Length: 118
Image 1 (cartoon, rainbow, N blue to C red):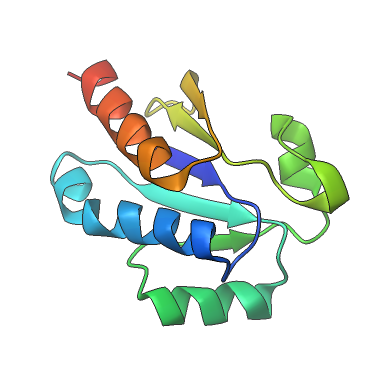
Image 2 (image 1 turned 45 degrees about the vertical axis):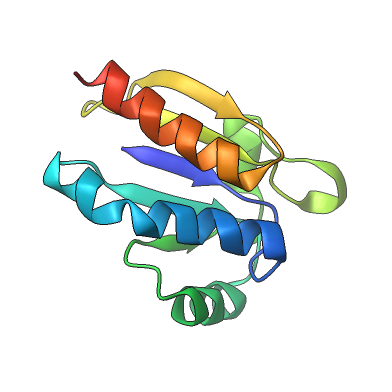
């Protein structure tokens, strides 16, 4: 599983990130990989963002910041940092990718996942 945290739904960087994962989603699904995005945005904003970006995978709302806090990715102003966790089928963290630039972040996360699961 690729679990990625992003700062704010609907912003240019987070839109590029969601679209980057969406572009490679079929390739990932063919390898049995699920992608899940999560931010501290409320449910309504996440739903609008998912529809606007036509995201084929779940986007979750962590409005109470509990999940971001438990993963250690809660940043300034209550926003999630841009961090991706690569998880095994058992839910064990295999790798952690952090980075501010969405394009390289997405490519790095997918490449690392495909390498670690080979």
